Amino acid sequence: MSPLAEVRGLVVRFRLGPGRHLTALDGVDLALPRGAALALVGESGSGKSTLGLTLLRALRPAAGRVLFDGMDVTDWDERRLRPLRPRMQLVFQDPYASLDPHLAVGRALTEPLRVHRGLGRADAAARAAELLETVGLPAGTAARRPHQLSGGQRQRVGIARALALEPDLLVADEPVSALDVATRAQIVALLDEVRQARRLTLLLIAHDLALASQVSDRVAVLHLGQVVEEGPAADVVRRPQHPYTAALVSATPDPDPRIERGRSRIVLRGEPPSPLAPPPGCRFHPRCPIARDVCARAAPPLREARPGQRAACHFAGELAPG
Image (cartoon, rainbow, N blue to C red):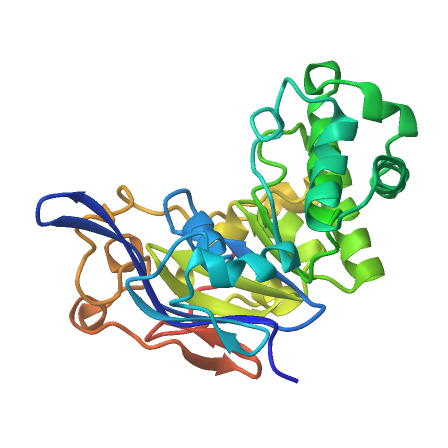
């Protein structure tokens, strides 16, 4: 079965001024199987949100291809994309900024139903009540304004709004970064629940590798605009093949204090390189604990390191988290 969404050789650049560009994504190949959940993790500035927006064709790539449901939509203009928009929806990072403070929750949910589905006022209101129930909010929430809701409640409204048009693809861009720890787990569990119930394809963009991997089938790790590791979620967390992934796993605390006390840490030296001037060879080599001379000379390809698990490293699997 072909993937629902896919990028091939994706390059995205942002113009900073005359003759100056920032390459946010550089040669990314990634596929989202139908009905599956893929977690995209990495540090801030690695290109995660840019990849999500390009997959939704909110951004036009400089090179490479974007495919949706078997169609090459790379060069489609907005008129051609319009019929596809209901099928691809976004859950925004900031629940405080993503909802119009002047609109009641009910109207935020009914407006897309009336515009895109042609529902009457009563039918749209009934559907909005169903959506609120789906995300664990009482029907009375429809009469409230965003400022009357907690952060977790606002993000539930954002998820309900994204589900209103029954999309095939849901991109959740750091949906829990602005929430407290307890609420984060609830929102991620909700995304997993609705994904399975509706057979959605989910791209979950996150910083927290451990949390994202709990509800994802596969994990892709992004570093300075390139995928450095991709594979089944459990394998990537338990047996990371790229040193950068191993460092991310090492930085995640274990909930068992006895295990946590006995763990060693992988401490990366120096500061992350600037995306304006990425280093030659492997882009991680200036901070890599196992880098050799070849790492500064030649960029390693993304290739199979273990069955079903790819890594872009000359010495894949050599560094394990403590």
